[in-house]
Amino acid sequence: MLAELQNSIGNDVLMGLAQAVGAIALCAAVVALCGWQSVHVEREAAVSMVRGLVQMVLVGAVLALLLSGSLPIGSLILLMMTIAAAFTAARRLKGMSGALPLCFWSIGGGAGTIIAVMLVTRSLQPDISILVPVGSMIIANAMNACAQAIERFRAEILAHVGQIEAGLSLGAEPSITVATYLQSGVYASLLPRLDMMKSLGLVWIPGVMAGMVVSGANPVYAAIYQFIVVAMILAASGITGLVAVVLMRAQVFSAAAQLTLRPTETQRTG
Amino acid sequence: MPTEIGSPDAAAALETRHLSRRAGERVLVSDVSMQVSAGEILAIVGPSGAGKSSFLRLLNRLDEPTSGTVLLNSRDFRSIAPRELRRRIGMSMQTAYLFPGTVAANIAFGPRQRGEILSCAQVDSLLERVGLPGFAARDVSNLSGGEAQRVALARTLANEPEVLLLDEPTSALDETSVRGIEDLILTIVRERQMTCVIVTHNRAQAIRLADKTMVMEAGRSVTIGPTSEVLRVG
Image 1 (cartoon, rainbow over the protein chains, first blue to last red):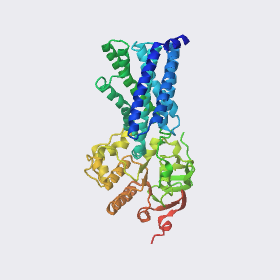
Image 2: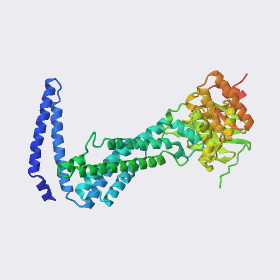
Image 3: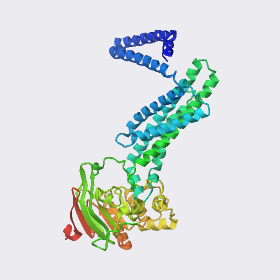
Image 4: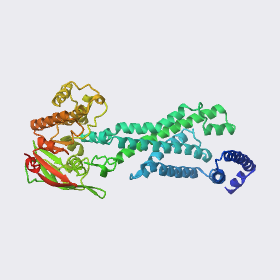
């Protein structure tokens, strides 16, 4: 593994550093231009650029070590990413008990299912250098889908407490009273991914395709593979959004079919 | 096996025993005991923040009591499935909260939850009962405040509840609509021999409607008795 690291600090790295110096020089020129117009960001720009460069070099070094690892190590990396994603998404449910496991199972369920399907169908090679980058893209999108679904579902519930409790008062099942809002949550999680799919190739050429073309792959194959990845991201997002709102629905009602997610009760005036 | 609890007043259709609810540090309802008989109307009056609505929400278990209980025909309400309990103890809220769609769909909502389909004639009959004949096909977004409140009442009545809970049903209405709704409540309760608990901030309304009145302050029942005595009518 150390040999891999040493190899990576070769001519390519020196060339990269030289190009980074060129990029920094360009940024410094822009900062100077801003200073000429009394916009002084010299110190902040210098600190940001040094931090950014050091962080990225460190990430590259860690990746160089990790990407030489085996499939179990790759799976472990994806698991750690899923946990980190669950922590990030769970912040949207501040104050709700069980938010972290809810997000973990949603993201893990959505991303895990799709990564497994891709591995089984051989559309994703069990090679750590492919598995981790593609898997991380799917996990990151599943995380966003989870956050968008639960945030919309929560907002819809809080905006329609009266309607929901009117339904409960008429003897409806809790799931019936929030069915419309559950659909909104899932839709909110899918919409950005649907837009991404629609604009594919027209508005943007995603990273996987760009990377494959740069590394010499057939552009047509790279384009088709990119479509597969985006389609899998859409599928993972759909599963994640659906699992997230269904799990959340179970948490917002008590065993006695009482809505527990409400604006602060002590604010009621009656 | 349902829990049967003997009641000191055999005629009480609805009874609370030492009913309390806290939300965090704040006491919303504290140790409230009361009884209402079938065909009787109990008004709950008191200043804002007295716990009137919070008390009403405990009766059909929209909120869980911290302590104490509610008896429906001498049966502890925890022994009744929440959906069944809420069908038997119907509630009409301060705001109508109608579901998007037609008036008929709103009225048919409750029975549909139990797999019962109301016929057009049954919907029309309920609408006539609340003074809205021919409103079945109307979209709820085109109703006035008074009309929406009447539809909400008809929607609750479609479940044929034994107890009717009304939370400030006329607070947002003009004087003409208020009297219309009050007449409607009196007629329906008397005709169906229902038990009715109405929350109102309006003492005059309590005098017009209620057989008994309970005055609440700071979550407690301060007085309860015949309206003529509690509110010193006349």
